[in-house]
Each structure stands twice: as C-alpha cells, then as structure tokens.
Image 1 (cartoon, rainbow, N blue to C red):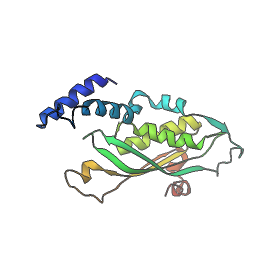
Image 2 (image 1 turned 180 degrees about the vertical axis):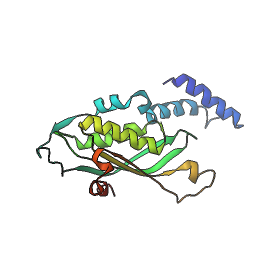
Image 3 (image 1 turned 135 degrees about the horizontal axis):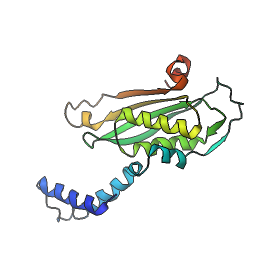
Image 4 (image 1 turned 120 degrees about the horizontal axis):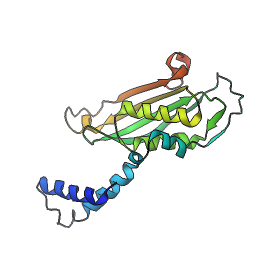
Length: 187
C-alpha cells in the first residue's frame, strides 16, 4: 500500500471540499487516514488462498468424520467498505458452518478468516463467497455455509437514508446447497 500517495490524495480531497489542510485539526489528517486505511484494508494484500494458509491451523477430527456433525460459529462481528462508495458496511454479523472431513479448524481461526476477508473493498455477497471459499480450503471440506447480516452506510447515511435497512446474504457450498437441516444451523 502506497501510504505517501494516500496522504497526497487525502490532502487533495480536503482542499477540494473547501477546507484548509494546514489548519490545526487537519494538519495530520492525511497521515492518520493513510495509516487507518493500511490497517482497515489489510486483506487487500492477500489472496483467498493466502488467507487459508495463514489461518489454516487444523486439528484431527475426533468425531471420525461423522457426516451429521457440523461446526458452527455464530455472531462473528466484522466491518468492511463498500467498493461502490467506499462507504462503511457495519453492524455485520457472520455465521459460519462447515462439515468436517477429517480435520477441524481452530475456532479463533474462523473469526480471523472472516475479519481478514472483510478487510478489503467488498460487496457483502462477495464477502460471503470469499469466507466460504477460504473456510473450504482451510478445513479441507466442500461443505460450508455462510450467512451475513449487515448495514450499509451507502444506504443509511446518504441516498435513501434508510437507517433501519439490513442486508442478509447467504453462501452455500456442497451439502449446504441441498440439505435444509444444515442451512437451518445458520439461522
């Protein structure tokens, strides 16, 4: 990430909106925004495969691969930025479920995968697909379901200004596509 270029452009935006980038409250803003973007968009630097490798710590499945066993982690909180307006997607809750096939992921790794996939310019629909793809690779299973509920400031703070609207998306891979009982785990 080119922090110097971000600083230059943020200073230009401050000037373009009619503010003085040299006044006390704004003097360090370009550098602060650059550091913020570096942190909040860290996931841009990694492919889904690289994230799966980074957080793919697994343990042997002690259930002997019983197909009726699923791992479910609910209410993982993330935020992201809409790639259409660079607007915050917030109050996002991710539910992830997968059927182990010989190995299980460390539970904290599931939340870390969700967080890193969200640290990109995203669409909520793509975020669910990215998380499902990463979990599938990291856990070594084709059977993954992801649901996401979230608010989008491109709807709540501008445009229609509907502050109560929530967007709900689903991504189903493998047996989650056909097994209603598995999908129910994500509700």
